[in-house]
Image 1 (cartoon, rainbow, N blue to C red):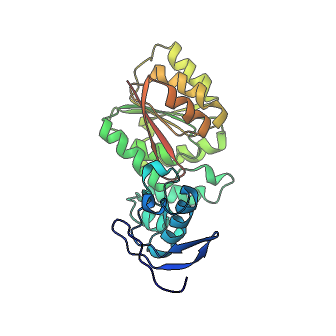
Image 2 (image 1 turned 180 degrees about the horizontal axis):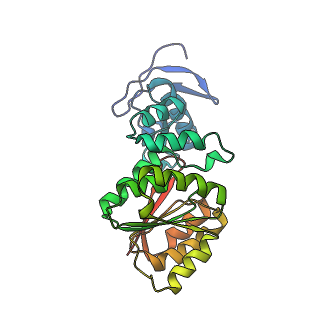
Image 3 (image 1 turned 60 degrees about the vertical axis):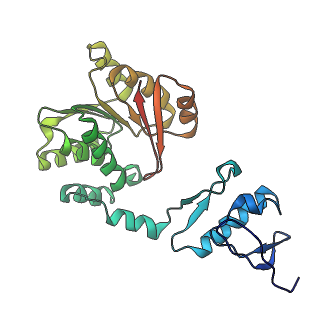
Length: 266
């Protein structure tokens, strides 16, 4: 087919081009996937749209794979875009220094990203949280970010089993002048949470953050649900599938950093 042909699509203009996966395809701008599906299968249409989107936009985008979402385009965070996001994080100097020191340590990938820490701090402020729990503190980047915004008299219980990581975290709590807000618990987090429950602290906490051993998430969740009024935790797929079915909480999955799932006890 050598002649130019027009394809009618909402908010789009198309000229036929060479084949893609065995199909003649148009050069699409602002594509309407539903229109393309009149000509090819949904899988082929979506694959083509993803390819075109990556070529035709300054920022890479992804097309929702489920055709029921009508070809909704979402941002794909690549390295340049993520660098831009990080450049717009208001990171206090003390947090930057902790992040840079942690980057030289073994297991540094466990540290939350600056945009995650900024979101956590904002959630604590929005909630007006005064009593918080963190499961999996590592060197203290996220807990320090939370402690910095907690009001005087606020408290963060920081659960961490690695003594060397705690030493780093404690040093930065001291430097930031927030040690009085952080109650470091060295040991297994499940034991610490059970101890809090046994000590009569049920429903006395406002906020919880979990970034720890993934196979323990369901147990942490069940324990934290007894301790908090509002619960937020980072999750893996199986855990999120369980949350979807749990009517005791409202949930929202947030694609920030390496991912978060926010839970609010009903």
